[in-house]
Image (cartoon, rainbow, N blue to C red; front, side, top):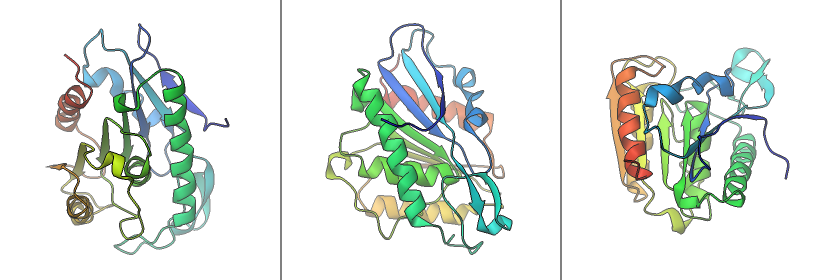
Length: 221
């Protein structure tokens, strides 16, 4: 199985849970690596963190400049016209990482898929269509790029979903994130939504809230 290059942070004991966390446009897997200790999860939690690197591709809205991206963004318009085929390919690549975790002995119900911005759009597509039950979906400063085309798998109909967004986000305006949440709820997902007085970033209050949610969906003490 050919896998995306990625960073792994393994627990001291054999992993019984995994969090696959996707970065945003122009970043790489190292972007969210520092968040692991900031989450303050229990020291005995056997959680493996996986931070994949997106491939470097030309990005149309950045004058074709080659940078790490999960898919091309074709237009800076509010609804974000994207290369859906590339997004689907990225979702397939993340699906392989989930499959590999299952092969390594982690139950699918102990796997969380998370993503920031562009990575969040891929995380949404991946988690809602994955053919085995997952532990949760976390989207940060993101949008539902495939809202009109997605075909969710019924096995994850009860998937816990948490979406966080900055109220002052100039890159992905907050109302776009809220629009995605409304669509998720329309599809029947129990979706938590929280905003923070920040721009296109993550803050300590948000990290603390994420930690509480992760403890809950992964049943950590």
